[in-house]
Length: 77
Image (cartoon, rainbow, N blue to C red; front, side, top):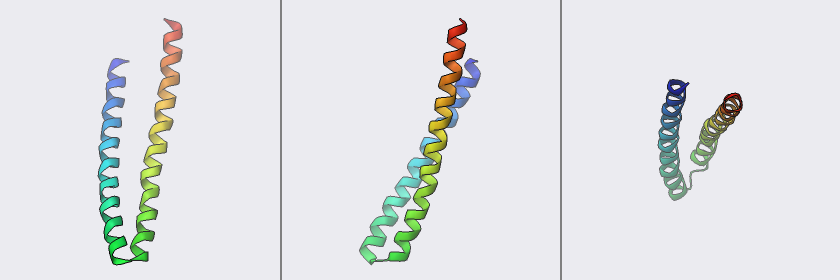
């Protein structure tokens, strides 16, 4: 059980780092698009933001599912 928990923590850490990099790129791109008044670039940034949202939602669902498993396990102990 402990090994699985630690593996899940590693996966979460990797996802957070990935999201951070994606957000960094989005901020930089947003500034450049704003300075250039580039609507097409702005639209692409908005669409790319959906990927960040998807990762966030997926990780939240996984954390909730893991919390339920832990609650069940603790109720047996």
